[in-house]
Image (cartoon, rainbow, N blue to C red; front, side):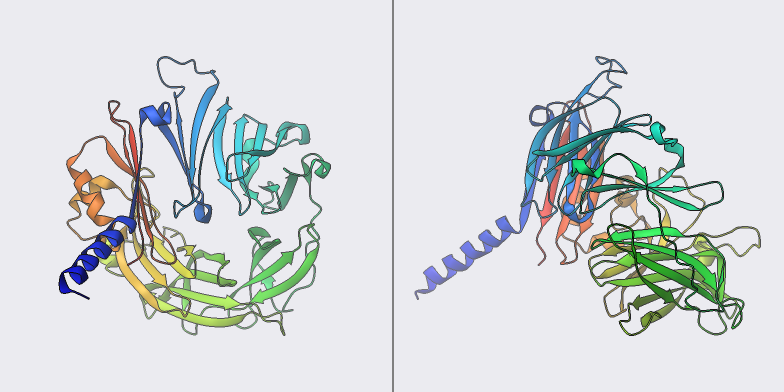
Length: 446
């Protein structure tokens, strides 16, 4: 092959990779049909942007019906839909593996629409919580299942769990009703004294997962354990597990609670709490798997870390008065992310935290003091960052497109995301009325 042709092909291939490794989408007032007033992160299913003439706008009435122009995208931008939906109350968008769930709520009255990912309506439901004696204040959390059910998690004055459900797709599913939960009566270990009530942990792969905290006080007054119960789609008890004591010898738990989460990718349970070892504040993280031959979960790995620069950042106060919150656990595919966060902060600002990221084998691939989590970014703080508290971002490709926005006013970052494969996403909003732009950037993993 002649040398000139060979060099031309190399340049052409480089240009091809440069073009197709980055995607950019711009939405503005003209294409959006209004102002971008809402953004919804739908997790693994993508995200949605809502353009409308907000009720706070001088030209609209506070009780007016809003015409919402909705733009849906998958995280890799390969799937997208644009559709219009009217709303009169608090309007939210959620997603399951199979559907988009649009909720329009006015006080206790719900109007729920189920759509496919092309924006076509599959079904809709209208119901009122008040008809069964509920109000919005008692709702702890709402779950949406892949099978099309809407689950209301409620705790009464005694902290006892109640679950209400309605089938959003099958009309034969009836109205909103309370589920009769067959709570386990047998203890996984006879010595386990229960300290807490049943809590709903997650819904995954057609199973509902409940857990309650206990203590194996016969062996160690500091020994903490969890009784975990699996239920099928009809809330029939399927199987029980014990997540046995996760504190190592000579370690004391700080605070009253531990964090507990299911990692759907690994099909494992991660638990974390603040600890005291040899007079120093720290935290532990352990990952457990289900054992087919035993009701006691198998320990995959266990890690302990000191709190970094606690004297400077005061992530954990040992003053005998404060009750620190347990670490916050989240998942990103097979990765487990743990944030040790100060419990006194302005809710409108990012929190200083120690962030540790584990791979599936329990190796800590990142451990730094940071501002915010992987999804959050305060652009003003990021642009200054004298203490290098955004090191998780500076090595990413999105850093090159975020930095120029430091020179602009009326600009913020709606979301940043790095998926399990290392692909990056950044969504920037310029809310200057003359521009009203949302710019979506995506970089393929190098």
